[in-house]
Amino acid sequence: MKIYFAGSIRGGRLDQENYFKIIKHLQNYGEVLNEHVGKADVFSFEKNFSDEEIYKRDLSWLKEADVVIAEISVPSLGVGYEIAKAEELNKKILCIYKKQENNNKISAMINGNESIKVLGYRDLTEAFKYIDNFLKK
Image (cartoon, rainbow, N blue to C red; front, side, top):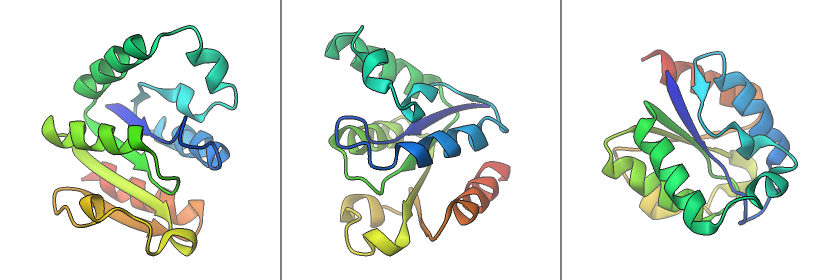
């Protein structure tokens, strides 16, 4: 299975450590095409690419992916765009967020979309359970 993980980069790196742990968990199910999103030094990695190259690379990965998992606790224009593109490409999409911090901050365009599974979690154990259930279907 090929998995695309969406998490904020330029929108804020507040949850980078969680991204890293989620990506490690996702690797139990297959290849995470963009595992660099979880790395603390992601900006060092991305500085070697122009914005156009990043766009083309990420779009290619989205097309290649079987599923998209997005951590949406930190609002990000890029993550929103990736989710919309994934929907356009008919990908299975799971969006997870830290429930205690974001009860009213999830975009209605994401939360109200019946083709996107959106789940709030209290801790990573709960997030992993949601991911497991989603990927086993």
